[in-house]
Amino acid sequence: MQLPGIGPLGLRGGHRQIVVRWTVRDVLFASVTVIAAFVGAILVLSFAISRFGGTGDWFDEGDVLGLPARLALAALLEAFFLGVVILYAGVRDWPGVRRLGFVRAAGRAPYALALAAWIVGLVISGLWILLTQAAGIDWLQPPDSATEVLNYSGGALVLPMIVVGIITPVCEETFFRGFALPAFASRYGLWGGILLSAALFAVFHFSIGLIIPVFIFGIVLGWLYARTGSIYPSMAAHAVQNVVALLLVN
Image (cartoon, rainbow, N blue to C red; front, top):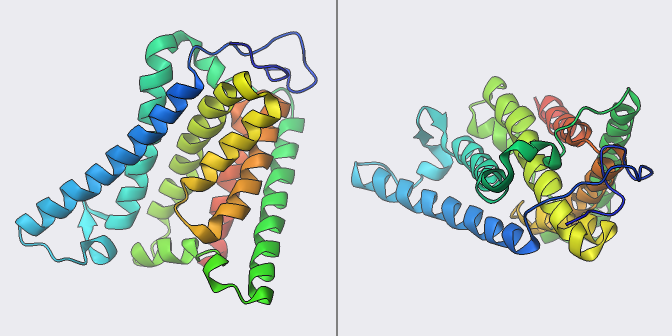
């Protein structure tokens, strides 16, 4: 499959194109696998904790392997994202990891675009919060995820920074931009791929209040990936978004 208009040279580069050996079907199966594995992990942990004398509120107050439960589950979800990419893409084409976007971005311009993408994401989030507050639609207001993460971590900043600032951008960008976007784009065109991967990105945030701002930010990240031909700038923009949110709350 050829991905029109996207490659190491970006949107304007027609000399090289990404050829992927995975399909839209693989992306959908991978998404279902992530959900099934994540739900299964929660059920197994719930059973094990209750079986060995744990309390029913372990999800909010307990620990898993020494980590706050929600932070541990967040890291586990990211591991599942990376795992299914290896399962559905890497096993078939392990030498072709470059097709997931792991190519060096040329010069400083891609990272300037990454900074611009972060600013766009910040503006979108702010506008969405103001809009939902002005309209009085409480159920559409985004949750204060950064505060929740810090609260679950007892106010400590190091572990949330590692999970949210490093692990999450790497795993999610690999899955949604490196893996999902090319498969969708090979069938529905470049912008179809960007929109569908952004929609999937939004759904996996499991929050009604986050769907719209995350969907739009996903479009920005998808465009950034397509424009630069490298996954690293989108990882950088994603990381900055998460890290700044944690720092502001802290």
